[in-house]
Image 1: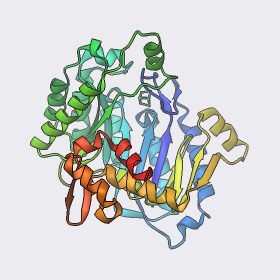
Image 2: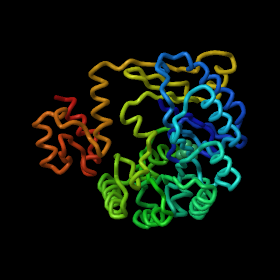
Image 3: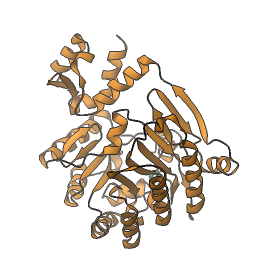
Image 4: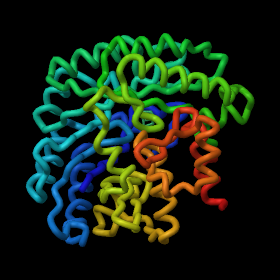
Length: 368
Ligand code: SF4
């Protein structure tokens, strides 16, 4: 079993952000913890707990979980452990922004049982960070890494965003080097996408911002793959690379379609072929929680074909790929001939060139 807690609060909205967030100067930490505890309670009688599976990973994502009062992180983790068996050595991740990392918070997270931090760096270039509306500067990223390590939090992943608009004159290789100098255990690389209802979407619609073209996006992605591989990182999933032994177990659970419970506004839950998701906005989540209503927005049951397709899609995202027998021979031959895939020990997996075309390649399987 895997748990995800969506903490929606942010200090400011980043220009590209499409997540369910609530911008708050003062974070209503206690109200949030109370609402999440109520939702957690409502899950306790669910059949998914039959057989008493241990909780193997817990992930505080957001939003910006590092803005939550650390005492509430402690309170929630304590409650989860009281009610359910949490595996010895469970991976407990908390997403943090560099400017939130203080010695006090880092020590409190560690004491609460957090053992992995995902740090939102995005870039080390001042004009890029300002354009993204990030609340931190480059120096704060390095300072946060030092503070986390001093508190005993050594397993730190850095997020970077590539393919930002040309006019920012972003030096991507330099950003990669700055990230590597900080010796993270893990890196997540996300291509900038333009969502219409974000500031970036509006800038793009008005012609004030021109997205990077596919060629440059692909070039930056492949350059990162080469540089990180040379540095000993395993590029083990489309957007993720890790030092050996430091792959993200929580994310890997999604790719395996393992059962997970999502708590908090907009969080998704999945068991077998059933998916459900919560109301998106914090205020509605809170209102429903306080009045004793369900916070679920909706649910769906996947058909056998949809499960099969999801399996293929998720499997092809990973370096382990899927059994070769699940890809028709003519498609396999085309992929292998185009260097988009490799076949080994009866499994077919996409190369980075293939990952750049993931949606189209999976689409070619479904159109058959
Ligand atoms: S900190 Fe993260 S969740 Fe919050 S606005 Fe920025 S990108 Fe979105």
